[in-house]
Image (cartoon, rainbow over all chains, first blue to last red; front, side, top):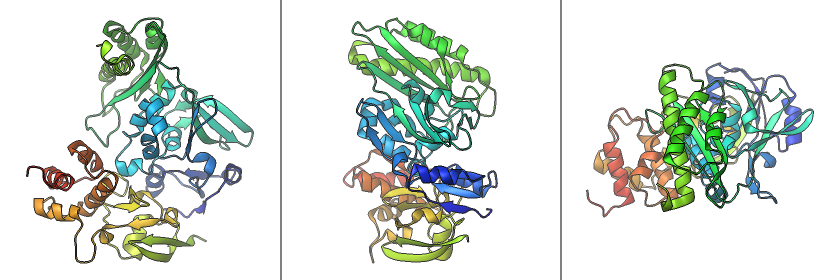
Length: 291
Length: 158
């Protein structure tokens, strides 16, 4: 490993000054960065540890009910957080799929997102909940939807001076549920061949008034399945409807064929997982009244 | 200027050592502190042989820089047994033959110690999940799982 400087800033302001250095890499959980540095796939003049910055650590509920999750919060901390489990269950369960328990104890939500793997397990749930990314850089602060963050495999629209500080998960309407499921040949320690996150919100009559379907591992970035969402809108949950949404989601996917699966197989997985996640969300909302 | 002083506690003993910033926690433990019970398998977080406990959390010590352990409490396999008495996880692995070549065993023990500290009565699925990041190419896991089930419920059927 090449020599590098190491800094541990204690505020975002200090971090932004350090980040202005050329070739600085942020160290959050390190579960991706450290192997990359070891294997020479990345070179850093400066490694900046962000785990001592209060604004990037911790989970808190804001006055308007938004849940704010610091970018440097670990997968385990999210999976065990009572507010996340209660109100954003699809996120709490999807972060518990990342690597092993040892990895989850270090790996962070910000790292999973900024690494921008199309297969990242935490991203579909964030998209389903309309999560915003709070970004700060030389030109000030901005907030964008997580779904708009990605520009390609491993690429985000953050400019070199910018840092993702936290995630803002808006308060969900009362009758809302979401689920994320992925398909992997091995149950643990594997990368999704395909993954689907779905969220539905129902009105008092049981009609779907909001729907999100987000796809992993079936495109150059995590994708939103717009036509599947259109199928669901203003309808009442039924297995026939979810079947149709699954077919639409498979069309929204743009998978490639690789060692993990063919494009055709991945489309099939998307339709099945879409159906299953919608059924799981609906079961949660309607308990035993819907089958 | 790639050196710095690291202060941390390892197996209850306060340590102060001069480290290179590029050192992983694993290198610190094995090379500087001569705690060679922690093994290096893959070096990239896939195999779990290097599992140690840092501030009550299991981690792959190959995936952490030593500098990140500043002021942390670290427990390695050498710190698991009390003087003259093995940890019940170790006892159970011996009783059930949950080890063959032994290379993965320190990591398996650390993951299991971490699991029981968090959940004293895990079920089989909790146990399999807790050791999912510990690769064993000898046992096929059955005897490891059996041993850990015995720790979880010593009165359960053998």
